[in-house]
Image (cartoon, rainbow, N blue to C red; front, side):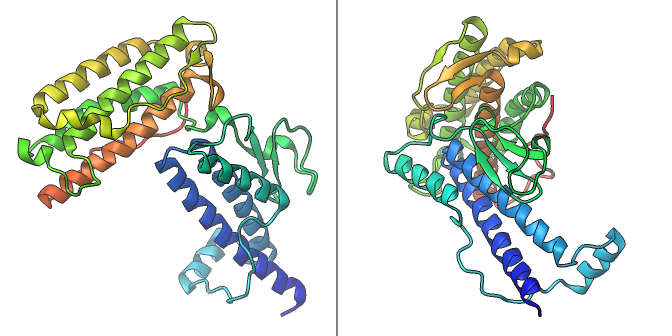
Length: 327
């Protein structure tokens, strides 16, 4: 094998491993609600992916789709090769990760001032932060062909239709998941560290109330300052454990109807009304809608898992709806 091919294989192996590492860390950061750190990991993953794809093509491993299917069936088996470090491989990456480390030591996420908008070249993986202009300084790819990871999109990029469609289905999903579980099971904790079914639903009520109040501020006030405090934590929902499930479901339904009534029929301009958040800087109603959907979907999946673990049976189909991007 020539030195150039060996170097390409090293790059492909290293960047592929780095891409998966950053991707998995991003998922964990979102789970822990460090959304800007998750955005950093996602951008670093995208940069590694672009470099891996470039090396893979340069190795001649991509042909026509017909050829690719044949190669896939044959079983792609890359040669094992020493890679060296697969993450924190550039000065800028290390600088950004150190900033994340400091923020976490202080028990918080990165702020918008600490981590601005990020763009990643889809051709070579060059990563730039802040107010970026012009083509990629490494390969010349135009800025329009870059992938962006903007502060205002840290929560996701769902449009109004997708947000509303998801929020409208949640009450029925929760009722379906609760069906067949008696009061004892609904109050039962599978472990000391895991909330009960009732507590999770109560937590969703608390967060829906916070989302609605923020949405109202964005719609009714010019450039409001949104409270920097985190929404109610799960441990604040312990009181729901002793309430009847019908009372909890009724409260969720009432809260959700108020939220939907506030949002229903809004213009595109209304969804883009902005305010200021201490952590995320300038954000709009779409940002908060994505936050609400992301948070709720995660807990609905958790509710589905609790039901499965309590009854050891599956529902005939998926109850928690997926979400698709777009307006």
